[in-house]
Amino acid sequence: MDALIPRPRAEVAPGAVHLPDWLDLDQQRRLVAACRGWATEGAGLRTATLPNGGVMSVRMVCLGWHWSPYRYTRTVDDGSPVLPFPGWLADLGRRAVAAAYDRPADDYAPDVALVNYYDDAAKMGLHQDKDERSLEPVVSLSLGDTCQFRFGNTENRGRPCTDVELCSGDLFVFGGKSRLAFHGVPKTLPGTADPALGLTSGRLNITLRVSGLRAPEEGP
Image (cartoon, rainbow, N blue to C red; front, side, top):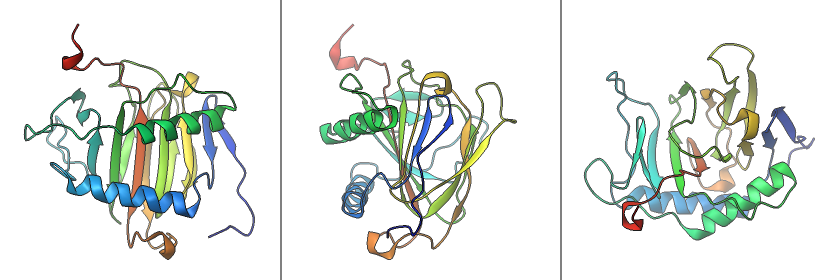
């Protein structure tokens, strides 16, 4: 659904760019359909247990590399192989980085995706994406319900920080000086998604990253 007043793009912090409504409705629908497929393949959606025993409230499925707090592996917790990272998703990531930074991004080569599903009560505490060996930008795509996204600084979980509403179809890219900024999702706003999307409830977030890791089958 087109906004009455278009939301402008914004550089929230150096290297952190928000592009509202970057995906049109058809693109969003295709991504939702892909997420449904990934959620039913292999080990499917799962919840992750943190080292302190806490259980994350989001459910996730991984592509390319499997993320467990706080490391990447080539197999899921049950020993099954991680789902492959599709080439078309890497192409989408390159287009996203090019749009965010207004430059060619042919060298951007994401090889891991975390697909997180937020129900009405799910949230994500402030954290850094620092389990990768690469500091290439992180690409974040939002689908479904709007969320409050908190983007902080690189030093700690306190201020300064900025709250941004991420709606379905929004793109958020962070790299450069903001690559290791703390960020999280304090809450989602139930019932805010366009019914035409076909996602009846909740929010999907797809983040693309460059792991910097070499798969065992690739050798030393």
